[in-house]
Amino acid sequence: MTQRSPQVTVRQNRTLALASALVKGVVAAGLGLGALTVLVMVVWISSPYPDSGPGGALRAAAGVWLLAHGAGLVRPDTLSGVPAPVGVVPLLLVLGPVWLAHRAARDAAEAQEEPREGARAELGEGVVERSAGPSRAGVFCAVTAGYLLVVAGAAAYARGGPLYADPDTLAFPVALVVAGAAAAGVWTAAGRPFGPAPSWSPLAVQEAVARTLFRHRAEAAFRSAAAGVTVLLGAGALLVAVALGRNAAAAQDAFLGLAGDWSGRVAVLLLAAALAPNAALWGAAYGLGPGFSLGTGATATPLGLDGTPALPRFPLLAAVPDQGPGALPNWAALAVPVAAALAVAWFTARRAAPADAPRARAWSARETVLVTLLAALGCGAGTALLTAVAGGPIGTGSLSVFGPVWWLTGPAALVWTAVIGVPAALLLRLWRLRTPGWAWRRDVPEADEPPTAGAGTGAATRTKTEAGGEGEGGEGEGDEEKGDVSGRPRRWWSPWRGRRGTAGEAGEVGPGGPASPAASSVPASGSAPEAASGFEPYDFLPTDPWHEKDGPWHGKDNREARWASLKQGSGGLMADFPADRAADRAGRTADRTGPGPDRPADPGGPAPTP
Image (cartoon, rainbow, N blue to C red; front, side, top):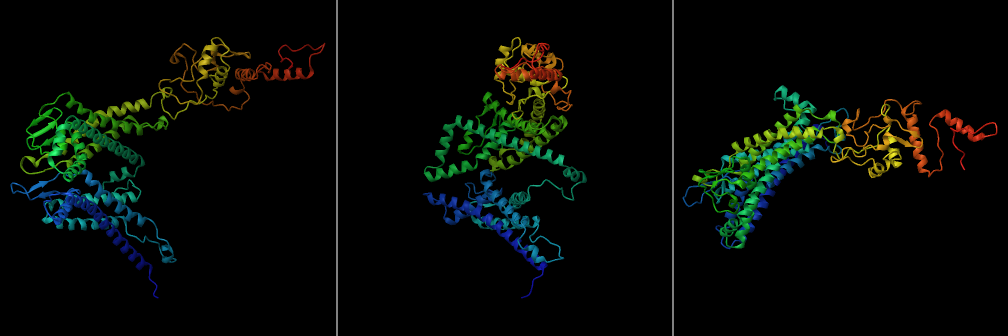
């Protein structure tokens, strides 16, 4: 047998991989077309009075599938004899083809990322190893070409049907939608990298993309913009639902009047469900201010409905407001952009001042403003893009303009988000960076304070509190502090939880002796924390090692406080013990020898233990 060279093997593997990617694109398009064809055929079979045969139903299914990619359809069979355009794209149908194209490109690219087993052995020694599969650009082109082959076939087949595609719309936006979905799939398979910028881009752009800080800020702006667009859609959908609830009788009459049998009503219900995202975008455009057009001579805004609308009979159009000036319920729709702007501000402030990061890592006010403005720009661009496909012509004459105007809705979303989002983001940033003593962060526990050199130690305070506060006023305050266990999270309604001083803290600690006023950094009870000199919400670790001989841990006050706590816990079995080491040794010597006739007992030493 003739041994194949490594170059021939690599070339053949690349050809097979490209062919596999092409087939995956064809299969993805076929799955989407087949699923929609099955749905249309089920409706056609269940209809008691079909307008055409199975060939017409199949061509109509092909036309609707092309409409889901953004293609403009033409309806030749009209009462006037003039072909009428259909440009309103049901956005719910777009999800299926886009997801299939994205998945096909992702799977084809992931197959090339994994190295083949045994490929290194086939190359042999001394030969530079090369990838056996095509590049990412090759996979993208193959998947896109395979998908567009099916698109071209479907457009040719639907040419003689009741709905056929306009040839001018096949290149834009159909080809652009397929290419975008495939590019997103390849990018997902590569791990969603952000950069490097193309070589033909300006040098300033390449340098900016190469910086990690820029990538993090751009990612934060993108997430905030996506949150703003999502809130706009949700608030618009809520607005439409409320309007439909108010006009439920008109929506029911339109639904029952379009079809008399159950199969026709199911078809109307499916069409209304496919147009539900469009209705949400119409509601968002209405709340933003520009509103939407209801023909060439009517526009609906929160200020009122001007002109005479040309409304076809459809259930979702029952949510359109009545003619005349707007009332207070119509003006309440302005809460839609306010909610979107607050969402953008909240997501930006979360990245500007993270709850689990130190204050030094927070963004500056200038960076917060720039990222918020960039997010507002992204929110406006996304809104303009979505509203551009949410409307369109549904006929000729007065119905040639129907839906929101994208070049008004997009700038309106940008202005609303920037004007409200920037101040809100700055205020949220200041709120999250306020004084640590007022921290409400759930992940910041209130741990025990370590001793400090200047202000004493928290051990004396804790010991005295555990002892029940034997000083003046210790009983009342001590019982209250028993419920405050260290380690509990700090809440905004109790900023000094566990730090409130007692009256006994300024006085005696226990039988061991009086405590110094500086033994605790907590102000006395009854005085405001701000009034105490040197008061800080948090203590810091001492600069001196804890094990030094003259350190605060071995100080007299601390030793007395610890011994008083141990004595109380023993039930009175432990004797008083001086904090001085010299007296300590003297006391132990006196215990060993015991008092004699010529050696009286040391009054400062401990009493003999019974």
